[in-house]
Image (cartoon, rainbow, N blue to C red):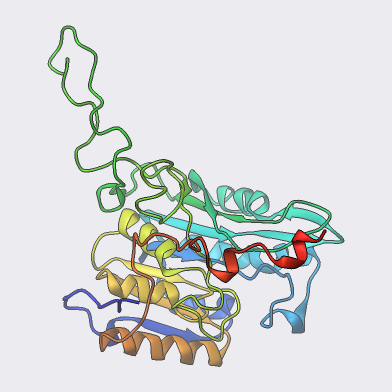
Length: 315
């Protein structure tokens, strides 16, 4: 696996901040209107190790996050954004899509939804009385209509590069109709650069499970690629990127890789220590992240994991 090395820039380890503390209090250490982007994935209240001491009902969970969302919205500058990544709350087999609740919560603060992005992954929550969950959502909000957006760093290969405008009159008649630099990746994401980018505009990042190069002690990290794509398209170099639930530091790492200033908050000293070590490794050129655009690995024919078990043949 290739090592991710930070870009050469004026930003040093000291440029980034990792704050240990509850988000509601620690957010006061971040100046209002200072952040170009908030990228985060709040706890889902589904019983992960960092949630077990304080399981909440859905109503209690939303009440807990509402004042945090208020503060987060205040941290975003006028041309900035929030990318809010969530899954589902499940109780007694009933699914409550969390993006439904957060959509209204953030819209009520004056933000405008630009995309509801689907993040697809191959491994997720197995189910026997409903279809297994294999996607989560990223709600991308801008604070105003005058927002920063740069599609060029995240363009993907054209499906039909030879497609042309119809013949006839006009300056474009008969000329190639697509952008030679690539096409818009759409709101359904994959990072399988050749197999799927060329055939379908899906963002299909492998989630961070055992064997993923970014796996740490944190049980529920999102992949660096997800944060990086948001950062590249929605911020400029030296912009501040905030994650109030930073966990093992993925968002700050992604910001640092691309010459942005990362600010991360987490109440767990254990996770903050992991994030700090990863940031130090990045500066030393030794941190391991999954490179952007590498195809998702599929098992080859003949591999044990892809071979039908003998026991199944008997059934």
